[in-house]
Length: 373
Ligand SMILES: *Cc1c(COP(=O)(O)O)cnc(C)c1O
View: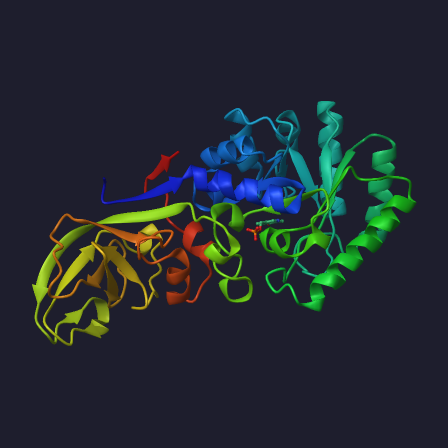
C-alpha cells in the first residue's frame, strides 16, 4: 500500500441500491455527482447500474459527459448547468437537463434548434427549499414550457423538486413541500402537458416517506451506505445500510515521547504520561479535517488511537499508548464501516462538527481508490 488509500466495497454499493429498490418499490436514480461522493464516478455508476439503478444523476454537465464517454448508456440527468454551458454538446451526448429558469429553458431550446436534437428536460420547481427551482418566474415559465412541449421543441421528461428537511421526517415542512409540488403539477397538467416522470425524494425521503417516492428516488448518501442523519434517522446499521468506504494510512513514524510533550502546531495537546505517538501520513491536504478533535483517531491492531494536537497539511499525530506494538511503517484504519472497532465516517464527522457527506466528498484525488468486488 502507498502512504494512504481508500478501499471501496462495490458489493456494499450494489446491496444498498437493491435494498432501496426493494423497499421503495420504485426505480432508483443513482446520484454520482462530486466523483460519486468521493467514491469514484465511473466505477460507482457502473455498479449501481448493474444493481438495477435505471437513472444516473449528477450536478455538472462534465460529469454527465464523462459517464457517456465511459460507455454508460442509461438516462443521465445533469441539474446544475450554468447558462454558459455547451448545451449542444449536452444534447449530442443525450444528457437530460434540469431546467429551473426561463433563461435556461431558452438556452436549451436554442441548442435544440442548432443541433436538430429535441432536448430532454426535467423542470425543477422550488417548493420550499429556496435554492434551485422555478419560483417567481412560474406563471411565465409555465406558459413557455407548456408551449415548447406542445410544439415538440422540448421533451418534458421530468418534473421534480428537492426537500430541505427530509432528514427530519416529522417536520411539517416536508408535507408543505409535497402539497406545493402537487399544486404546481396540476397547473402544468391544466395546460395540456404531462411530464413522463415525477421525482422528489433524496435518500432521507426515500428511506422515510412513502408519499414522496413518485416514479423514482434520487439516491445519494444512502447508496454509499451512510445515514442521512444519524441523530434523526439512526445509524447506517440501524437503517440496514452498508458503508462502502474504508480509509487506510501508513504510520510514517512511531516513537516514544515523555510526559509533558507539546504535540503539533501551537502545542495544543500536551502528553500527560509517557506514551508512543504515531505520525499518520495524511493531513488536511488529503481531506482530513483540520478541526477534528480527539474524539476520533485511527485503529491499529484492536485498539483506537485518538488524535493528538492539530492536523497538519500532510500528517497528523495519534496517541498509540505506551504498550502499543505499532512500529514505523505499520498500517492503520482511519475510518471504515465500524465492524472491527475502527472509527467510522460518522465518528469523523461529529469530531469535526460536520456531516458524513463532507467527510467522504473532501478526500483528495491524490489518495488512490482501490475497488473490491
Ligand atoms: C445531491 C442531491 C441528491 C442526493 O441527496 P442525498 O441526500 O445524498 O440522497 C438528490 N437530489 C438532488 C437535486 C441533489 O442535489
